Image 1 (cartoon, rainbow, N blue to C red):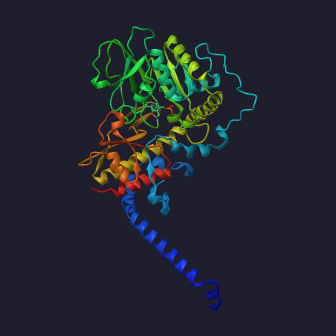
Image 2 (cartoon, rainbow, N blue to C red):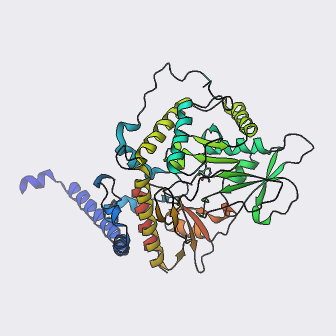
Image 3 (cartoon, rainbow, N blue to C red):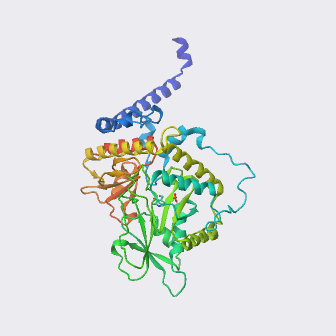
Length: 439
Ligand code: PMP
């Protein structure tokens, strides 16, 4: 004991006792915060008894995590859960598990030229990428590729701009053509259209209130970002042109009802496989002239699209197609369907308990891909604050949840868009926070 006294001086003992007290206070606070855990545990029980038994029999490594796997770090208590962006980190777990299957090596001498040289419509399109796009659409049945031209872009964002350029009437005396979309519309559309104050096109606002005579372009997003609804062209007048943005028309989000066959149809690697950072999107274009004009836009703006990214995308798309045929381990759409299914059930259970919020309801329908009736499970939750809360974004922000206000989508601030594609850890913390908000 005497030794101990000499080792631990008065100062040491004071510091030690302060540290012990601080950790006790933190722990008490965290345990208090964790009382919400009981709300989560109850809803977990409901979700488990409701969940398709197939989900529980999946391979253990890719199994859908439950609440019990959530992190218990005291520092998480003060962290803001940022669900503002649709960053698809949810998919990382699947691709980690696939290991080397999608690893590519590009030697220093490869992919050096500007040119790909096989398509006369899109001179920078890599043949391998085009092959895999066709193969995946055929496997999933979500788009007709026969007789269409593929144009590759740096994300589908690039292709939206390219399509606006290609569809706008080219010569004066035309006024800029109005570009509209039904509310709630994807929040980036107005900025994409008006950023450069083009003389060719201008943002015309919500399709519902569009009354101008003459030509217009309608952006049709289905399933829709932010609210997940299935959409068709709303205006349908003879002078109208449409760009179909089908970034979310994949089996993990919605039942595949029929192959899309529109004049300009856009898809994005970001939302299909989760590889947003690879920056690849593609357009299926029926009219050759339109496809050539889109390619021209990409030629002038970026002199093509990264070949490295196209080769990586090709390998990833091939892995997805092969997984659909049961060739390479767990099916990609099986995995992502299960994660989305469970997350939506968890969220609905928490929302039902809170009495403060509501979510859109979706009707189940037959999916030609999975050959069964399924309910849509959108990439975003379009959450509404019920009752007196007028500004749902600010309200949630006070509870350390960051979403995007309905205002940005041409809708009421009573709505907030929240990403459903974040990591397991963040999604669980988000549920935890939401569970703690009671009416
Ligand atoms: N369209 C919609 C409807 C989207 O939600 C997004 C991404 N948030 C995009 C286009 C752009 O996707 P990309 O990453 O391919 O540019």
